[in-house]
Image 1 (cartoon, helix red, strand yellow):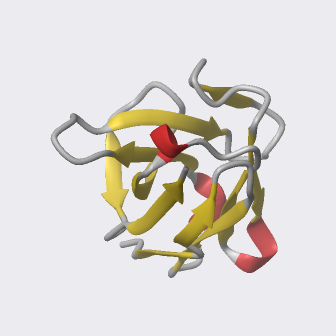
Image 2: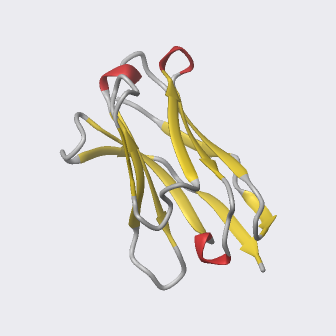
Length: 119
């Protein structure tokens, strides 16, 4: 069993930066690929970024490529999402999720953290 807790959300002006964290409980964190998703009001949840269990493979949605960076620290059981050059359209609840391997079913989800970007 893995529990995921996101933090680091908040209100930021357009062009600003935030770093989200997702802390995982349990000793098997390094066995999972980790993803970030987001859901804006009235919209479906969408993929943002993914990172393999070693941290050497990363994937991004086109909408965030070049602005967001996903990383992980397996010693701290934490995955991060560094978000730069934020836009109002990045406003959403951001969720982290765990999967056995990239491309497989998501097994665990966090409760989400709100990110609001003002224009």
